[in-house]
Image (cartoon, rainbow, N blue to C red; front, top):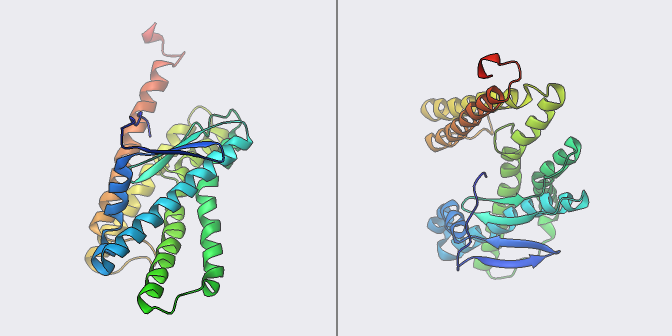
Length: 250
């Protein structure tokens, strides 16, 4: 999230609702990796369904950020890259509560889509062809899974996910001097707890219902814990560099 994603000749670009959208080639690779199990279960059609569901879900997520940001006067654009996307410039706002609204809008759109799909699923027409009807069911199930679980994951107070950014704004509201550090401490603690649960539950077969398990999940949260730790070190250095009471630096 903190480096420029260079354009390539193979980027897919367009405008929708006056918003610039760019899709980096690595996004399709990441979506394909995420959808690999569908390839093994349903072949090429399953892989294409998975990639399409990932694309639509992440695009709508980022559109939620940018559209709400536009309403507040912050005009952003969208870049889809690797395993996710970025609503660049959408939270360039002075108001804390507007930033929180923009940040929440991404997962909020996904939760709304999940609710609409859940309610409308029985009314979606299926063709008489059994194979085609089965693929439609797969697409709906994948969309439900992505837009519920990914949005809930995104709302966890983990840096640099949306929930972590919301936590940062809330903590800095209560304590401007230490809010960023407190939010990063919370992020690291949550990541370590989820990683520990994922590993122990995978080994023992006993865990908290609905929480993800497995060694790969544990590694996933440990990576975010490491990112939070690096951000915490950078924040310590930043506050030390600009501490007006640090007379040794004068």
